[in-house]
Length: 210
Image 1: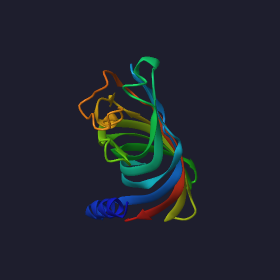
Image 2 (image 1 turned 90 degrees about the vertical axis):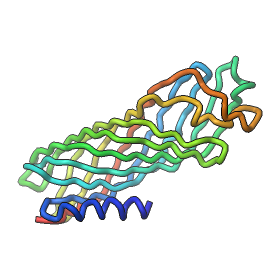
Image 3 (image 1 turned 45 degrees about the horizontal axis):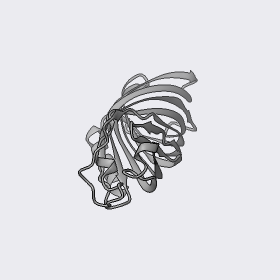
């Protein structure tokens, strides 16, 4: 986490002549469920936290870079015909979201309360806590919106909600090793699927630049 924050702050240093908003955030992550022919996987809801960097390019609009992570657990439930080949199990699962996109805001009250919406794309990493289950990367799109309350010209509070849609969540990677043999990394699940996730977060806003 420290390395990611350092990298994002270094990136922001290249835009010293722009208005930059740095927003550390924390909130509640909705893990979601995905169904396959062989069964379904449920990612437990849990806390999430991260950082958003907003680069203002116009009146309350611009580009935004964000990183969010959620340490959680996942549960695999096989369908009846696959209970022996792919037995039920649970495992730790850390979710990492890397996103870049744009945002558009609107003044709601005297430049102190700003409403905004955003749309971003990027990648999501599912990192299991067990060595016999491989990492899975997927393309990710997100949409969200919220409100910023500014206490003064430099500091404010940010509240927002986001919807995440990782595309083509499936395949052998995340299930490598879940079979009764313990090392059946060659086994694969037949289907691909989409899982819907989201979060509700809050945090501070620090304005940098001019």
